[in-house]
Amino acid sequence: MKKMLQLVKRNRIAILTFVFFMFTTTSAFASGSFTDAPKFVTGGVELIKQITNWLYGVIPVTAIAKFGYHSWSRSNADEEGEVQHHKKKMKNVVIWAPIALASSTLINLVLKYMT
Image (cartoon, rainbow, N blue to C red; front, side, top):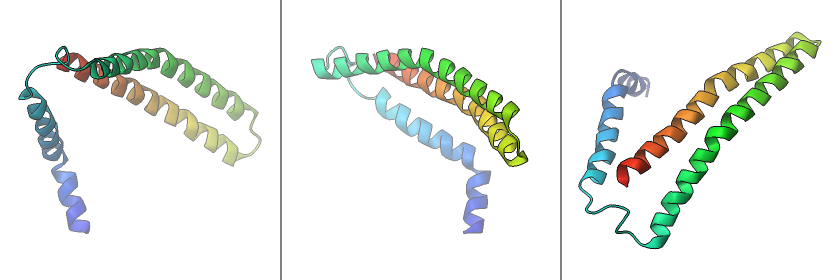
């Protein structure tokens, strides 16, 4: 098991590249576009676009509010364990908010590619 994990760690770029090309080539050979699709498909695509555009506003506001809350809670904490807890949560916000925005952007890019 340990050797398998080391093998995956060393070859993760190759694995990710393979998966990426596997999914992109499948959609590249598909005939037509969403303009030929039934109304519920095009409506679903528009719904996903609207949701991801809405997330562009919600994610930063939520991240700022959560970061501010944990910063305030950290300054009011009495015990070292509480301080470390809020410090960890602030770090998580700084890491995961851009990842959430990037994933929303990737969804929009895929939808624009397919239309």
